[in-house]
Length: 538
Ligand SMILES: CC(=O)SCCNC(=O)CCNC(=O)[C@H](O)C(C)(C)COP(=O)(O)OP(=O)(O)OC[C@H]1O[C@@H](n2cnc3c(N)ncnc32)[C@H](O)[C@@H]1OP(=O)(O)O
Ligand SMILES: CC(=O)C(=O)O
Image (cartoon, protein in one colour):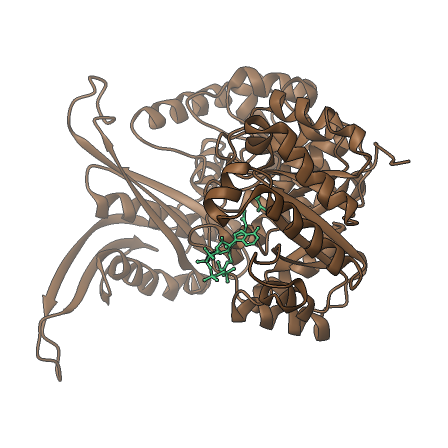
């Protein structure tokens, strides 16, 4: 008898995930993702469609030689045979066997519309394709899974026929019948009812859902509640159109909320946050801050009311402990903050303060006023810490700013015959150690030129400033936020991320001029580095 508590996890990131717009995994990427999925402990990894493209062929060839998976089993994906071909001669079936893996997943048609329109064959012929292909493959590999494409649409249109397609697959020996919500249009109640009505098929049922109605995860969970024991999905919900059920969310729901047994287990869930970021890096996609469970905002508290309660007991505003999925609690400081937010920040920085210390209120008012004028400290923790430490009198004066000038130019360079070269020259005036320094430097653009001039002059006195590099630069134009009246004057916020080889930090500058905002963020970054390095002022 099937153990309904146990759910098999089947990952299709490398096949359906690779059908996402703008995602191109190399063979090397696919191998790296396989190793991570194996370490997470998923049962099956769908590697691709052998025979469909040279990359998937190369992947299976290298996987045979190089992958030594400890738990996961690799599967090859393809369709039922073509109507015109005998199964043993069918090019798709041959391609599947050429992958030399022990698990094969084939998809077939459940919806009569697809049989007559897409395949252009009779309903009876389609049952033969399904049956023949599975029976043939089942004699040659260990496990054959049957993906019933468009099952829920087919079931709604012609339930008897949709059921017959499953029976054909079951009778041919399929190890699981996976019900696919291919167009992603079903509701959880429809999925649950359909699955419950199929339990008498006496077969292992699985689920594969798409996210076109933003219900892929909900539908997968509803299917499990109704009796499915095999769940397909992808990392970060990659997949055709709007994607698939996101395994990064499905897994903690199944394990922590629904008490299901999976090969991943509660002990390996903390791998999820890093795995999600890893896949985004390889897919060249930005990480969504608000991604449930693993996004950096998933356990970030902004509202003062929330922070105050979370500090007393984190269950007040957290549905699980962030560490359970490898994430962490964060507290943001903004105009939505109360004293609790600042106290939390101070304790993170190792500063113990009496909650009644009047400097907390002064700093809170300063932060709220700065945010009103366009500042944002969420991504600029360097600027925030500098202000907090200054309010406590802990930051010495390392140098004094006396102004800057910048010239942008476009010109012809030697050996070139057009004026495509863009360059800039920046001049800064700095009072340091009682001496006025006046330095000029060049750069690729105005910000680069000013950064070069600042580091040139300052690193003579503070050599460690030469280690700083600009890692990311973001500009946001904020219309009218600089005035209480909300007029049409434009304010620019520049958020810069810095790297000194050891640490990364962000600083922010706000002004009605982009270069001035950049300069402010730059100066704070240098001061912050000197403070972190505990440098004594000259
Ligand atoms: C729901 C899903 O996500 S299924 C997976 C979808 N993924 C992909 O399509 C990516 C990989 N696909 C490919 O590289 C190509 O489509 C190939 C190599 C598989 C086929 O390429 P081609 O032979 O040029 O055919 P093409 O892509 O134009 O059309 C698909 C053919 O498969 C047939 N087909 C579709 N589903 C099935 C099925 N379940 N069983 C048998 N044949 C099928 C179609 O009727 C069509 O046949 P036709 O050319 O006789 O009309
Ligand atoms: C098989 C598959 O990817 C689907 O039906 O969506």
